[in-house]
Structures are given as C-alpha cells and as structure tokens.
Amino acid sequence: MPSLSSSQELLIDLDALVGNWQLLRATAPDADCAAVVKANAYGLGAAAVTRALQQAGCRSFFVATAAEALALADVVSAESRIYIFNGLRSTEVDDCRAQGFIPILSTLDQAECWWQANRRDQRILACGIQVDTGMNRLGLELREWDLLRKRYGAADLGASLIMSHLACSEEQNNPLNALQLKRFLDIVAAARSWAPGIEASFANSGGVMLGADYHFDQVRPGIALYGGNPETRRPNRFSSVVHLRLPILQLRRVGADGSVGYGALTPVKSGAMLATVQGGYADGLLISQSGQGFGEVAGIRVPMVGRISMDLTVFDVSAVPDAVWENQDRYIEVLNRNLTIDEMAAAAKTISYEVLTRLGQRFGRRYHSEAATSNYDESEYEH
Ligand SMILES: *Cc1c(COP(=O)(O)O)cnc(C)c1O
Image 1 (tube, rainbow, N blue to C red):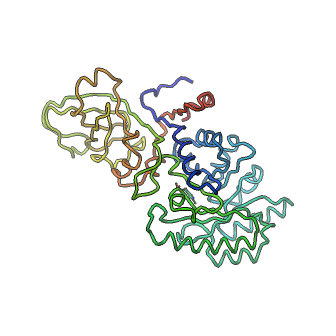
Image 2: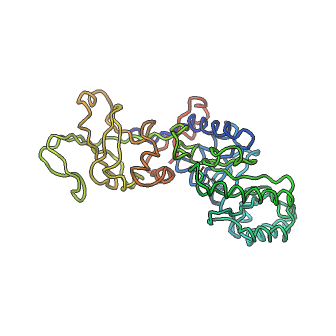
Image 3: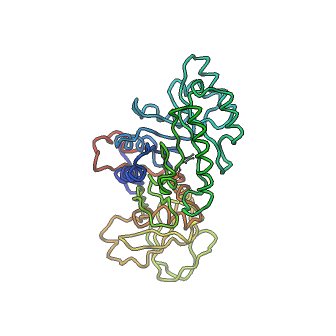
C-alpha cells in the first residue's frame, strides 16, 4: 500500500523492543517474562509488537479488555496465552471462553460467573485472580480472597494465576513496596495450599528492577519494553523504541519583533528563524509542553516556542546554521535516542505512559527490524 506519510513518521524500532524484553528476561531469569500490550501496546501497535516479541520467545501477553484480546486472537500462536487484566463482563464470557483467553478476576461476582460457566460447559478453563495489596484500585480485598477460597475449589474455578500490582515500583525506596510484598507473600502461601502449582505474578517493569524477591513465577513489564525508564532515580537502562519526526511546512526569518502563536504569549525578536512543523496536540503532542519541549535538527537542539496548535508546532531554529537546510530533508525530530519519552513527559508534566498512548493516529507507524525484515512486509505500515 502506498504511503503519503513518508516524512511525518513514527518509526518503531522492533530490535530495540526485543532487546528491552531480553534485558527484562535476563533481569528476572527464573520467571516467565510476559509482555503487557494493553492500549494497543501503549500506542505502538499491538499486532506488530506482539508478533515481534513472540518471535523472540515471549509466550504470555496481557491486555486490558476483552476487545483488545480479540484483536490479538489471530496474531498469537497456539502456545501463547492472552490474559485480560480487567476481567470479564458477563456479556464477554462466551467469546472469551471460545478463544481461550485467561481473564483476571477481581471481584467475587466475576469468580461466580466463571465458576458457573465452567460448570455449565463441563469444561474447566483457566483464570487468574487479582488480590489488592495496597493500591486500592482493582482486585479482591483480603477478606474477599479468604471467602473465595472457602467458596470454590481451585480446580473447579480453574485458578492458574494469582497476582497483585505495585503502586510505587519505580521508586526503589518507597516503603509501600516492601509492605505490598509482605502481603503478597502471605497471599501466595495461601494460594499454594489451596491450588498447588498455581503461578504467582507481582512485578511490572519497576517491580522487575526491585530484585528477585519481587519476581515470583511471572513478571509482566510494559513501559520498559517501549523504552520508558522504570527507575526514576537511575539512568535508563532500556533503549528508545520510538522515533518521531515531523516535516517542516515553513521556515521563516522573523521581520519585526512580535509574538508566536495563539494568545500571542511568547515574544519573538526580529531576525529569529522559526520552523513550523506538521503535528500538534491532535497528534498527541501534549499542549502542556508548549514552550517547554525540544526538537532536534541535525543533532542541534531547538526549543518549541508559542502554544502548540491542533495540527502545527513552531520551533525556534535560530541555532541551526543555514547550510544545514540545504543538505537535508526539512524535518524536525521530536522523539529519538536523545529526546526520550521520559524527557517529553517531564516537559509536559506527565508520564511517559501518557506520551506514548497519546501518539496520534495520523502518524503512520512504520516498523523497523534488521533482524527479521522479511517477516514484517505485510504489516510494515499500520494505522
Ligand atoms: C499496566 C500494567 C502493568 C505494566 O506496567 P508497567 O509499569 O508499564 O511495566 C502490569 N500489571 C498491571 C496490573 C498493569 O495494569
């Protein structure tokens, strides 16, 4: 399929993605290293990401919703498993059972529903169980967890995974980590006497970096796969996966002192060189980074100026020598190895997760892999 977006392009480096997964796996060598591909693999394209990780040996994939699981049904191989974090609505049960997805149950109602379906079908299908250990977001309360084990035999329920989620894993020294771990150890001990052989999973990306105590049988990183830093106080050990460059629509030498953009909020001096690129908040360039963010031209950092518009962003490129414009395609990079998703997030007063998941649908996603180029012919472009 021909592409018109050759210069406005979101390039996703699948080799870096696989390298990040391998680093996580090596950090938790005794655990199954799953991949969290919810929210369309944090905006990068769940099908292409899942294919690449599966080819590298990953066999466990987590999504948030049943619809996301269905979208991956034809992508995963027969040996791979798809887990659904948000469990199941009663209307989704039949579809999910037909596909063999593993729902993570977080309420007694969901457990009852799954148990009934197992009985009705005379077929026990696997489920996971989430217990809350201190985040107060999703998962059984401890007293509900006790009730669940009294009410149901583990075999009748199909309980195959017990999990919980850390609230502060990216902060090495936060005391809530150790407290949640202590609670989870008790939960796992109870789970194993109820369901011998049940697997336990606790660690997201930050949890993997907290050490072996946090790894259990399965780790389930997301953000580190995509190049985000899971340790706020340490340099990032993971490689950039996302590269975004935006075409320059107009270069302007400012004729008289004035201002840039809506609201006339940012003064600009006569003689300054401005570049207006295609790409704005409708593409996920968060407006809150107006006047804070940076781009790069031929390795030179250039600041964003004025308020980001829906489809346009202006940079002050006065620092770029004229000769540079003669030698290259006219574009500005906004995400690359030097301009990280964490830096863009800090400029926008948000987190790398939001930067990634907002990256807009107008950008063609192009997948690059030296290692397995031939496998991506069909899916090279995904919109
Ligand atoms: C999103 C999510 C993960 C992955 O978290 P990262 O911080 O991106 O590694 C793991 N577990 C649960 C329950 C999640 O919701």
